[in-house]
Amino acid sequence: MSQPRDWLNRRRASWRRKATARDQGSVLLNQRRVYILPTRAGLGFCALLLILLIGSVNYNLGLGFGLTFVAGACAIVDMVQTTRNLAGLVLSPGRAPDVYAGEDAPFELRVENPTRLARYAVWIDVEHVAEPRQAIDVPAGGSTTLVLRTATVTRGWMRAPRVRLSTHFPLGLFRAWSWWQPDSRALVYPFPEQDAPPLPMLGRPSPDGVGSTGSDDFGGVRSYQPGDPLRHLAWRQIARLDPDLGGQLVTKQFEGGTVDELILDFDALPSGLDVELRLARMTRWVLEAEQRALPYGFILGRIRYDAALGTAHQAACLRALALYGLPEEPA
Image (tube, one colour):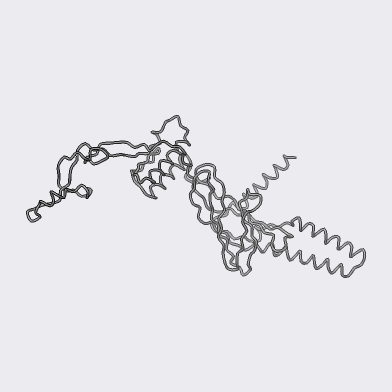
């Protein structure tokens, strides 16, 4: 029994993929994309109509015929209105912010209604959810924006999942639905390691002697050069120099200093660690360095970034970590 059911599920999944394979950008739901079937209440209503019709024929009841035909006409009108509640909507993908693996990825979707017919109780959710979680109303000539969230598991590009739109409006005798594949994607970063070691700070000699050590070893003064820190200007010596006699700015010079250098190098991590764990550790170090405002260099295979800080530098490093060993474009 399971084999026919599995075969049917595969056929349905293949049909859905083919129906939404060409969805790019904004998509118009025409009537050919809207499918409709009676609900359980609709099937019960059809059985009731059949009973009324049989009774009216057997007993020759004029009022019974009238009631049967009026109720049947209401069912037909409901079928048409249920289909029209979806047909004509324009669907557009919105923003998809980057997230970390294990978090829910939010996909923004926009539903526009260019017609003069208001739409009510349109249920929207991703296809793997059995019961839709959001219902929207779209006014005539207006639009509605919503956010659908879906769980992430692994790093890399994640395409927006296929979306199912359905409605039972107005009477609930029929269920109309349609499928849509939003043309959007989200970048999933590795989840930061929880108990990562401290940042790998390295000491290196400083050419001007300024750094974490040796900054108190005064070695004299020299002429000011563009780029010298203002705090190292020798103000006492400057005050003694008469500008009219050719005086100029001078800078204090120190000896034997070192500076702390922060280089996040993937190959420098222990080779016995799993690749994903090393990526998670690098992710944690990037976030910690940004939080502590420590300029950091970044080396990941052929990717090398000089020491820097800021949103752009962080995004470039996290993107490299997310796509390490993966294609640049989603499958």
